[in-house]
Each structure stands twice: as structure tokens, then as C-alpha cells.
Image (tube, rainbow, N blue to C red; front, side):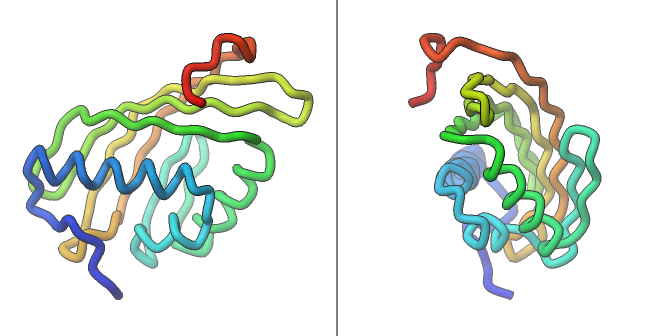
Length: 137
């Protein structure tokens, strides 16, 4: 296992660095790159799905980005403790029919001592938007 700095305990500055690293990775849509930020046994709740383990995360991300085209994400710092970070986020994408969506939500993250995320709990709502309403390009 390779450490993923910044490491806990987090300060506001290092929590924001961690958030930016996550945003950059997710915007790359590189499944392998994103998955390496999570422990082998990471636990997720994503909307109404419960996902366990890095391999399941890879499968989830592969399916996600196969249907959420031109995905673009922005994450915002909310709060942190020594080994936890809370973020709010929005992302935009379009489906196969060309309908654009903006998805909003909150995430709660918990990290191990090596800076890998061991828990991710995401609550997400979607809203259809016109392409002209996009903010994240």
C-alpha cells in the first residue's frame, strides 16, 4: 500500500488539498487513478447503492462514466476533523439522448493513516438542465 498525501491528521489547508486531488482525479475519468485513492476494502454508499472494495469501485466508475458523458465535477470544502472530511459538490453530464443534468450532493469521507479513503458516503440529487445552463465547462 502506498501512502496518499496529504495524510491525517488534517488541517483546513491539507483537507482542501485532499479535496482538490480528488476533484482532479475524478475529472480525469481514469478509473485506475481514482480507485488507487481508496483502501482495498473501502466502503461506499453512493445514492442508494452500497459498494465494498476497490474492485467494486472500479466496476462502479466504469459503468458511471459509460453513461455520464462529458462529466465535469467541482468539489467544495465543508468541514474536517483529524481523519474525516466533508464536502459538497456539483457535477454536470449528459446522457445518451443528449439531456444535460446537474447533480448536487454531499460526501463524508474517512481516511486511514496512509491517507487512503476507507469510507465514502454520498447523497446525490439530479436535476435536468438545458445545455445553455451549464456552469462547469
